[in-house]
Amino acid sequence: MSWVGNVIAAVGAIQLGKYNKKLYDTQAAINRENEIIKDKIYKNIDRPRIVKQQERDYSEFFVSLLKSGAEFRLGDSTFYAAQAMKVEQATDLTIADYNRSVDSINNQNQSLLLEAQGEAALLQGKVAATGELAKAAANYKKNNQK
Figure 1 (cartoon, rainbow, N blue to C red):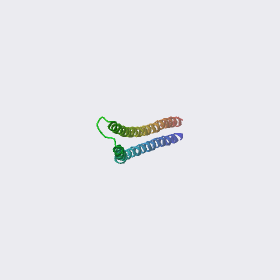
Figure 2: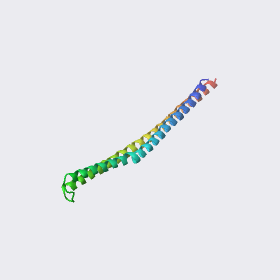
Figure 3: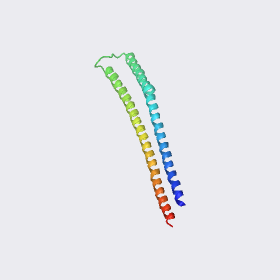
Figure 4: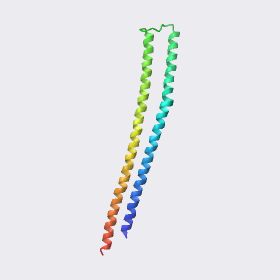
């Protein structure tokens, strides 16, 4: 009757594989939802906050230049300083956008890896089940040849 145990083990292996796959798929779905939330937060809160801070910083810089008594004309050092600040701010914003996109790609890749782990867990369960069913068949044949 040991073949019955093998059949039960096979069914258990398949169920465990299905359960693990569902677990990995759920985690991948949670990761995708978290990524959507992070993206919305960046686009609707962080990025506008950065832009507003940069506008305030530039306004303070510009007022500081005017208070110094220096003229603000094309070709003067004050103009070049203002342009350098604008370039630096644009660079900072571009870096923030890039970092956000890299983070997004990493999160998407993590979700894909979790799904692949789920597929591997399901396959592992099926392989274990196949082995147990083969043992069950061999034991059944062995026990019924007598």
